[in-house]
Image 1 (cartoon, rainbow, N blue to C red):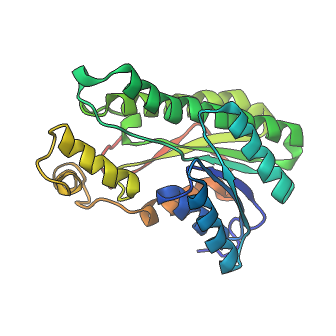
Image 2 (image 1 turned 90 degrees about the vertical axis):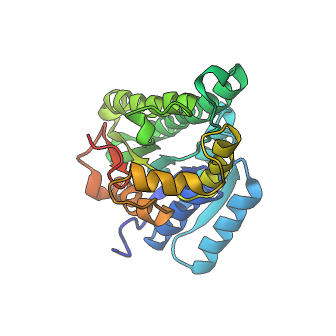
Length: 268
């Protein structure tokens, strides 16, 4: 790892209290980035920021961020600029899932997932882009990185609202790339598969509850054996290198792309 790969980059990361968001924040800071880490879980992001600042590489600040509220997204961008002087990159990682079989999907389930994963990502992109445009295209290239999923390119019968929300991530990447190119802003994303995080631990319990599996702990092993070419599920450490690449100058000539990081689960 280049210890200076992200040196001086000011990065806003959403959904960073745990899981992939927290892992990315610590990894980016180790490469010299300054990170503003946002989450509705304020205690969680404060703990992550404390770990980063204690390590003494990049700097970190924490901010309360409900991505479904435009004003929170605006405030998180402002916090990044206040702390570090500008914003170079927005990594829009916040997301949620709550499995339901098709005929059991209700309005509450649909709205929960779509509001956080789709509308929240749109708000994050727009508010970051507004600030980047105000800073001037000569200060770029700027980068917006959306976190998609394997279900950005397919759908499973038990997570259809989640699949819809992650198809939205892909549409936002492609449409955003076209809309923002003139401002020296690139828009890309990455699509994890089965990642062992706190979100998946809850998902595993939910899948038992709706009858997809008999016992907790079966889902990840089953998917690894039957659907993942590399025959294992992943961890945040398997994802953070690609995330860092998309945030670095090494990806400057990329836009409108979604990179799969799924162990060969979806090949396109």
